[in-house]
Figure 1 (spheres, rainbow, N blue to C red):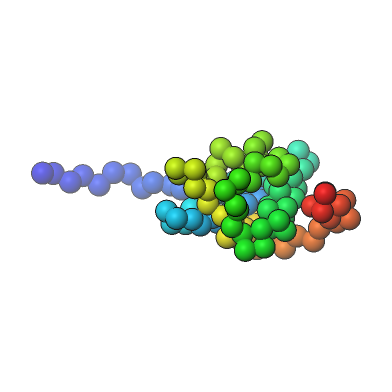
Figure 2 (figure 1 turned 45 degrees about the horizontal axis):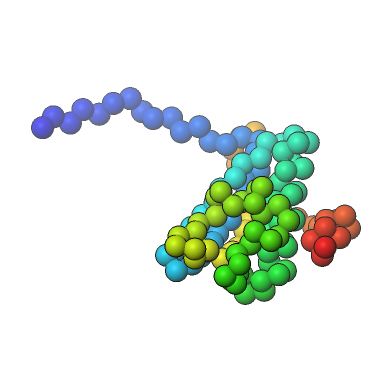
Length: 126
């Protein structure tokens, strides 16, 4: 067997982007969902919708664990996360946590803290 070392692989680091990291857990271990949002009005609005959804899940299931009905009854779950959420044999993962990171123009990573505005709070409490 001959081993040939190729060219250096250049990994393109994210730039000027928000990354939403969602951690789930269940009978079959933990799983991660990673979503990226550009720093423009449409993507920030989309990120806002994901945050509202995750806050609704957190509020409804304080321990994170859904009942057998899952999360489909929560507004926007089917539109935003149902195709990404781990389900096996009708056993749905529960939300463990979520966090947001921001990568600037130099690909430096920053933790993001969100303060919900009044409009978001009304939406979450609906």
